[in-house]
Length: 328
Image (cartoon, rainbow, N blue to C red):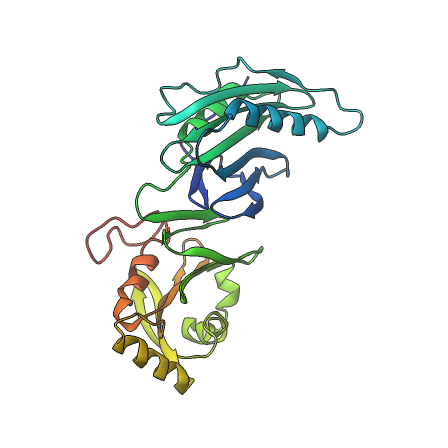
């Protein structure tokens, strides 16, 4: 059986869960939120490869019962004519030593039309019940493949920044910001986040050579960026960012009432989302355009650069303005 080569594997991240998989596997189905949800990754042939379920829980959790229920549901999903699945509950998909602080680890395998290898556990740090399974092709070492994927999976953030990664957009947002919207389309991948009126948006567009056929990144930005910040009068300035041709975007709300509200909140010593700042940049090597911007209180505009420098860009400058390595 073919063994897995993990050197070129890539990160996929959603709702604080980070999984490293072969590059042709990506998110095909998502639902729920940070407390309860589901994510499925498919390969290039649209075959399901990884399924992840999570749910916040308090107190005692019967992980064995959770896994039993999951396997029963798998049996019900069997298509007409497919063989019944044979379940192996003694399969050591991943070791307890590798899954530190994962309580009541329950591994399983099943064999039917395809083979599946998985595990369920309760994380004492994030209080999540997790069930993860990996599906393997006949010529693959499914046990090894699943062991690598599940053993390296992170079920909660390591720090105050959450990694989000899918379809060529990898970025980080502060943990306090919740996902408020997404666009996962062929030409545009966009993630939106919100916290008490403050907003973050990160996006990447493909086929930059076609989008910039008139040669002006600023004119492109003037067309594409305003819908991300409705009601804000934006200004644009040509610059460079992380070694790329770029446009810095800034602005404030047009409505005078928003300025009055901002003044009142500041008098009360409270923040108010009033100012936009962000960068559009052109990655020629990838043939992509990126945008990272925020709507925040005027005194919190440093968040814009912190977010923008956490957008993965393979051909970016080696270090950021603070001398720290950007994610790649």
